[in-house]
Length: 431
Image: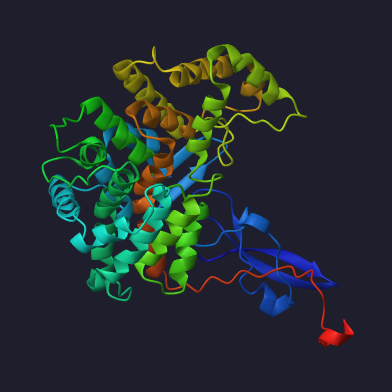
């Protein structure tokens, strides 16, 4: 951590304590309370850790007021427009954009790791057919540590590297197999002649009875979805991965923990919730009714897919995702899909409504990604697994960074205890 030249003074019961203040390369200054308990005998209280820095990181920076998202300093819109997912993976993992030779080697490595151990197929068959794909992914990813013993030693840098490559490569295969299993179709094996996004689409939608050719527009849209969700700083699932990692857990267990956390509707399930809202609205003529409900303070209804907890301006990812949504809908058409008709009309009305503009309730990345995935033919149950595929590289990058941090300690939040104080046990006959 950088040296501190400034301090903040905290006074408790007439006694003062000096707390170092650090200035990051971007973002607000940070008051270091590491030694507060030892010196003053008090904790801080911050539910949700919304005002607490939990780590030092050089991977992703978000400025919610400006609507800015940077990966290693590069704006997300530039990466989504000029780069592609595996190049962004390299950037997140290693800190710099790769040379042509480095990228070719990295892509080859990932491609050669896309197969999963054949015995792992038995894990899928142990689940009920109607199991949610996220439940399947949590179990299968966690079980990877039982198959890949040569990449579970977190103290071995080479094993950490192998685990990183395996997880990035195999996650699309696992997600696609979870989907195929849920709809009763045979698994489709990956192909080494296809790019990352095209391979995933083929594994999801191909069948043995006929040849499947991936449309480049859909492949590009899928790649952008992966890119735009690759990392998002210290969100709930990333913090879960870091917390699990702090105990020394193996990488597969840590990523499985991240998947479990991502499953929550307030996190990775937001785009699914958005599509379910569109289904509730049902038809274009009912949109004014729901717009009115969203404006009514006494109505608990909220428009899903609008606004963002971090971004107080337009979500920078949404601008790129909107472009992809327009391309996909132009290709596939919305005339015969009432759900997509509702989405397009709701977007148009909301962007023109002063109420939404004043409150910064712009369509976010979840709104557009849900529209794209629905148009492609994915059921809503697959939205969060696709998010997990995207975010895997972010989790791994944060995991690797934490293990290399000499200041790493096992996570151990404190609490504000409000329960009963010391009391003696009462025998059952005396209660």
